[in-house]
Length: 209
Image (cartoon, rainbow, N blue to C red):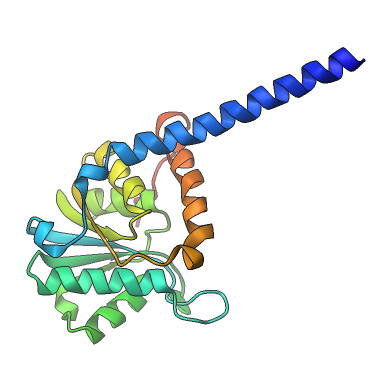
């Protein structure tokens, strides 16, 4: 009985170690294959027609302003005003009349001097996968700058490469680790899910309407 328990513990330990190694390798693959595409200042960004702004809620659960939302809006406005993009595709979740990420983004960008005529809303960008594929298939975007948080960009750019969208990425202002720790940890597992979706499960994006 003691031997069986010891053997069971060894197998459990091996499985845990294999899981940790898998998480590290999967994240390294996504990060290392896209890091050369990520730009941190407008001067580094090559001028293209479209900036794809990935959505998030404007407020957190307790009603306070969402710093990730504010950072993405600021980054999008910076690129537009610097002449690096001519048009912004605002892609996010439009769950209801009371929750509309693209509309919230457009209002925030108008407040920062971006004209409404330079923006298009995509309310069916429920996931990063949907946003990236819809940009190409539904809106005819062939080349773009993806605008989102530093930790989110590797996954978005990996998706873009996989689906044939020629993209670089522009980082929004980083949110302090103390305020973004849980979100950053979730992203490690979101990258693994993405790899499974693309290479094992063949998960299809939402491309209609």
